[in-house]
Image 1 (cartoon, rainbow over the protein chains, first blue to last red):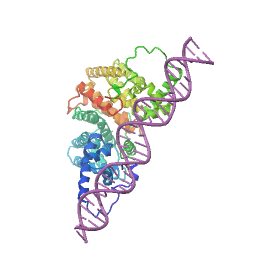
Image 2 (tube, each protein chain N blue to C red):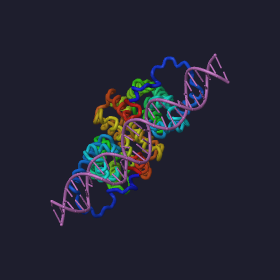
Image 3 (spheres, protein in one colour):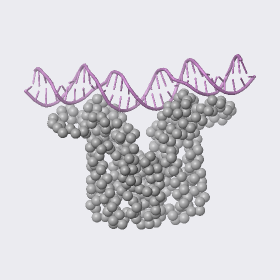
Image 4 (tube, rainbow over the protein chains, first blue to last red):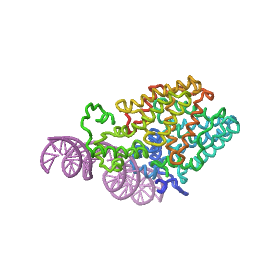
Amino acid sequence: MAIDRPSASAGNPAPVRPLRRDAQRNREALLTAARSCFAEQGMEAPLEQVAKRAGVAIGTLYRHFPTRLDLVQATFAGKLAVWREAAEKAVTMDDAWAGLCHFLETMCELQSQDRGFNDLASIRLPESACLAGAQTRIRELGVHIVERAQEQGSLRPDLTPEDLAFVIWSHSRVTEATHAIAPDAWRRHLYLLLDGFRTDRAHPLPAPPLTEEQLYRAMISLGGNGACGA
Amino acid sequence: MAIDRPSASAGNPAPVRPLRRDAQRNREALLTAARSCFAEQGMEAPLEQVAKRAGVAIGTLYRHFPTRLDLVQATFAGKLAVWREAAEKAVTMDDAWAGLCHFLETMCELQSQDRGFNDLASIRLPESACLAGAQTRIRELGVHIVERAQEQGSLRPDLTPEDLAFVIWSHSRVTEATHAIAPDAWRRHLYLLLDGFRTDRAHPLPAPPLTEEQLYRAMISLGGNGACGA
DNA sequence: TACCAACCGGAGGGGTGTCTCATATTTCTC
DNA sequence: GAGAAATATGAGACACCCCTCCGGTTGGTA
């Protein structure tokens, strides 16, 4: 739904004039409020609450961020960049298995700290979204991370880059369940799963990997429940 | 919230009179409708839709099932029994690893067929709920399943029964993402994770297991979003 | 200082969902 | 087949959230 409506992220080639001081202040307050609301309640936190927490009226929120997607993107650009940097670093690490672990651990850590990011990582933003590029880049890097670890022999050869989505999704719910009770429990789950990723004595898998297309559709479908998806 | 309200599952020692014929008919129609609504949309499907699909007014639904929890329990008693039977069988199988697989595979299959059951498996019902006993029994059996597989040496010794919750939770989201696109993909995820459960692949885990108490609280907290939890 | 564009506030209309209650209907029993 | 009890109905009160609109306010500029 959000994609069809006018969006601040659409091509605005000449944002000549700087924001007025009060507008600047409000915009920042909104982002701070959104960060905390989304972190606590996920990407579908009520926007009225974001506005209230920012000390601003709801109309002001909509003035700055015409759609929820605009607000989400402005809020999470930073964290997505952190994730991406972890991926960029992972492909340069000598030990490709360590690179894989670094990539996944950083991702899971971000997810477990922030329920909104947890939601964001699980879905695919619409093509038009300005953060979609970052998602695509992370996906590309994921392919290399997997290939390198397989070339070095540490990662089981029947694993595909699409299987990494299993880590995102499975971790998503595990951390949702445990973050308030045992904030580090997700590491245990992650490393259990990672042990299943190792080459040594891998057992045959009972189902084929997802295709790129299937993965894409799966991530779109998760976003369909109103947040930002198609 | 639901627990404090009058519940059909509370102690009714003398339900002397049988249901009137129309009431019986409606009750069954409601259960059928609930099964399909919950299967499609999860435990939080709108009750108005259940009533509509049953061809019955909303007031009638509330007459039969004063709380959502009452309806959920009546709807899922059967599937929970199937799960429990799988657990009972698992502890009698000679190959304890096969028993573990049978237990988890049945559970995941039930979860992937029914979004409502998927929700139900992830949470802990309040003590007062009539299905809470079945959940407790399944948990007990899970302890034996884990112990036997460890005695036989196939299951890594540092795994605890609480870790089985990771399978429930992680599978929950994986199947939610993939069921419409690749209905069997969850098997791949499950067996990746199971490979991580094998003794011969075990590497040290970076976090301690959940305690029983932590697991309990984690499952309660997942239910807190309005469905049936505390 | 005075003006105007940019900005803000918040009431309000629309949508969805829960749950209740007074009234109407059906079934059972005698 | 008539009366009583059980049941069904669905409008409506309430709560939440989304998003818009326009009168009032503010900040930058001449």
